[in-house]
Image (cartoon, rainbow, N blue to C red):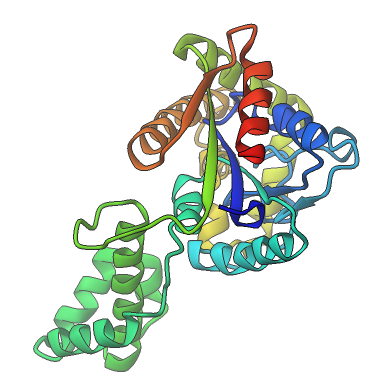
Length: 310
């Protein structure tokens, strides 16, 4: 396989040490970084999403950071559309794209080249046929079960708007299942010759790093950053999904202490890291490296070099 069909991906749970190693890899192999993090696309969420600081980049170009306002939605489809173009550009210049991130299903969609339109028309027709048999009241009830927020923006008698929202949700769920590898009827073949570097640490070490990272976020001003976002009342549903945002809401409403918020963020981040590792191990072909081992970084460099030169 020729060099311009290759792709390097660096993954691992939050706080494992991806950011610093990504810079070392980029410097060593003359690569740019394409962020594969679903939340770092948002502006004004620097601390919440753990973005790399400008002084830490060492001049390395970073893509897919700060490209969206917090009021805008962002999906795996949007991510793939943007990054496909970037990958094509790098391959045209005979360079190897370098993806760094922790959002597993975004990475999976790229590697297996999911087409989010091929089956939409037929699936829409199938859904319309199914929904046509149901009353508007039943359809509205189903929409409320999916999302009270969505239902609140639609009149209970507006059948067409209810149908649009339901169909959009159903299609999104089916796509998500395919991307997450849950659709056994959906065959997939990797688009690129991909080398996936997976970073891990002993669990207690990782959890200690997560707890300390959250402590550092509070010292850096996460409370102030989040309060400003909360007062704007304009965050998209996607942006609201950032760990740290929803945990602050009870505090802003006077229902808990700041320390309780911190502990909740630490707990939810640890749980998120566990889910990340489960996904990576079950859904991607990863070469794993334990960063607690002294020789791991040099081994990563060697293996990347071997991959690029094969």
